[in-house]
Image 1 (cartoon, rainbow, N blue to C red):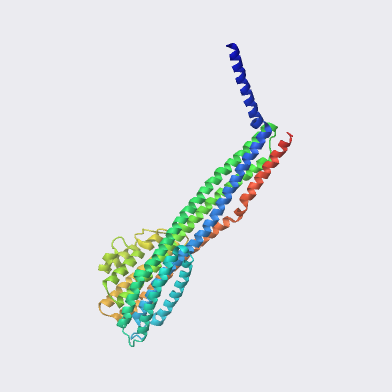
Image 2 (image 1 turned 45 degrees about the vertical axis):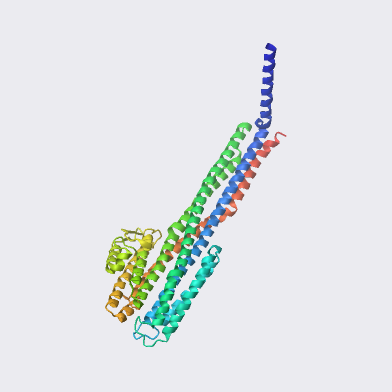
Length: 497
């Protein structure tokens, strides 16, 4: 039994001795430890370089994609606006007539309205060209072309008939011209505009989805850069500690420099990626969302203005309801909805005036408080960010309210059968007349759109500028760290040859 025990004990000791020696020979001797340290640092440095380079490259691509995609959305928004204004100008043409019995401003004549119609038509064509560049919109583009072509043909026939009418009374075009225009306007509102609105909605949704992914990606990349960078810096500090302990060196300058470089670049990379996420936030949530709401408000307001003219041509309850549905979309009140307004317009005029009167502008704080309005202007009043935006939003909202109050005069004139005064006031460009007031609203709206557009382009430009050196800095950092580590470890390895 003792012989067996001795043999077993001896065998176990031999095995342990062999395993311990193998471990020492493969990992625990100094040269191999140095090689393993160098390999670990190289692996972390490569990972750090790749993550940092890919993160900054993705941020650069996100900014470019945001600029390009929002440019397409701007084109679809502009198309929606141009189509609405085309129908408004066609309505104004028939409202006044080419040979009217009343005097109208030259800027509101039938010829001037048709000139604006043609400008809108050319701009819409340019917008369609940009939409056509997106293969995902090819089907809608084809349907839009067909529907717009049919609309333009009907308007051309209506205008041709109206041009032959002499001594035309206000809002009384030839019956055949009015019938053709009704058909054209129905086609615009049942075929053309819904497709255009669908394109705009789809593009806006794509921007929302792209933004969420890109901003989240930049934030995640910032965290990964910080984690891997700190791991790399920790590995370099550990290597420095080992060299100091093993070779009795107080300082290894190259390793200390590599660790310091890693910490600095990690901090800068983390900061720049968070900065890119912030610039995406500014560009999308603070600027583009306002641009989107305001350009939509402009298009819908032009459509409402056209409904006013259409109602004078054809005073039906449907057109009155359509008008108030659109003004509610621009500036809804809490107490009166579109249905109530169509039944009793005075309710809406009063409710809007009270809601706008309740707004409190603080120019010093660049804020508007006590916002009771809903709709697109309400969205803007609750998203004020940039210098001058509060004043612009406040002025725009007051101007829209003034325009809507003018609607009361037009409807009152028409209801007492004074179409001449109703038409004069509707197309009038003198201060206090409807078109002049609408122009003031439109100019104020364009001003605040401009503020947000400048902020959008500023955020994109700032983001791109901040990424300037990051096309090469990640790679330069990785190479520098490896070179410094090699300079520190290679002489120590040579001592064992």
